[in-house]
Amino acid sequence: MTSTKYKALVAEEVNDKFVQTVKTLQTGDLPINDLLVRVHYSSLNYKDALSATGHKGITKIYPFTPGIDAAGVIEKSRDDRFKPGDSVIITSYDLGMNTPGGFGQYISVPADWAIPMPHGLTLLESMMIGTSGLTAAIGAEKILDGNIKSDSGDLLVTGATGAVGSFGVALLAHLGFRVVAATGKTEHTDFLKKLGASEVLHRNEVSGVEARPMLSSRWSAALDTVGGSMLNAVIRQTAHNGVVACCGNVLGHELQTSVLPFILRGVTLAGIDSGIALMNDRKRIWNRFSADWKPAVLENLCHIKTPGDLPKEIKRMLNGKQVGKVLVQHLH
Ligand SMILES: NC(=O)c1ccc[n+]([C@@H]2O[C@H](COP(=O)([O-])OP(=O)(O)OC[C@H]3O[C@@H](n4cnc5c(N)ncnc54)[C@H](OP(=O)(O)O)[C@@H]3O)[C@@H](O)[C@H]2O)c1
Image 1 (cartoon, rainbow, N blue to C red):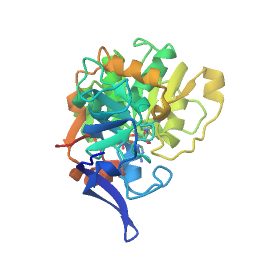
Image 2: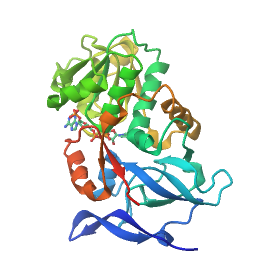
Image 3: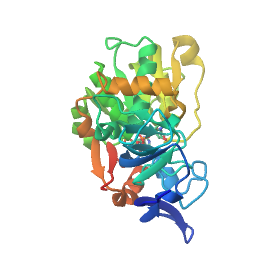
Image 4: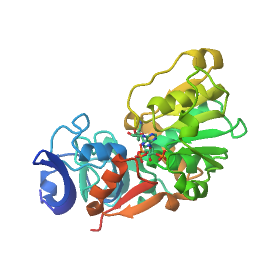
């Protein structure tokens, strides 16, 4: 089998420190799988920032190319469901964790991980959405499944300027909700309003509240991307029969709470795991994105960067300073 040279961002440990550098690699060194995909776009997710900086809970063996998202065109296929020239989306499973990921110009993946690009979506749009969009959309479905409607009351999004949060603001506003965005970066209020937020609060207005087990109801539902003490405060201020969809652990993985909001207010805490979402659920959501769930403001959400820009962007993400989503473009 012929091997092609390609460029990839490689994370490795040098002198006890993790660094990320663009290197030239060979497709022949990729794992043997059903599909060889020429990647056009990827995007930066929190998990990528952790993988790129040596978090062994995510990536075990380095040097390694992170990137849990990829959209591209199939170059070789050993599976009847796909042929060369087909456009596909691959997000999560093991991509970018221990299978070389979308920060390389090529990936080699099992056919079961690939979603045929739905009509109505481009490669670029699919990565403007990416895992962060999929995560926010799973949260939106959980909120809708909990019978929360656009006239039920305000809907809170925390970590609102982050990748999941900003997409969540855009999607939930697009679906007709009055979205309240909570952020530590109120200097980006205009950005959040352009995405569709009706109101922007400093995050301390959500989390800096009294320690009582339940407080006055402030929102009918919430998409929490932060976790920890923020999630605790969000739950205690959620209205009767409200839904809190949670995906993140920016503030740590522990949650202190009491049962009172659950047993006295019927609040539902709904977890999101986009990494193990079933293929049928993924396909349904990607089809929604190609139709009525594609926010008109997609382009406002993203900054387009190259793999060489990523070390700076990764640092910015780990310092909680990212605003919106970093889209990674491969120039072939
Ligand atoms: N479960 C899943 O399927 C899934 C999928 C994707 C991501 N995630 C997780 O979701 C979380 C968010 O991911 P992301 O890609 O959106 O990351 P991100 O772009 O880095 O956004 C995180 C946001 O959290 C807020 N934040 C940062 N430090 C904070 C602090 N000390 N206190 C309160 N808020 C703080 C910031 O928003 P503001 O400045 O606007 O407050 C920041 O932009 C991560 O934990 C990630 O691992 C989970």
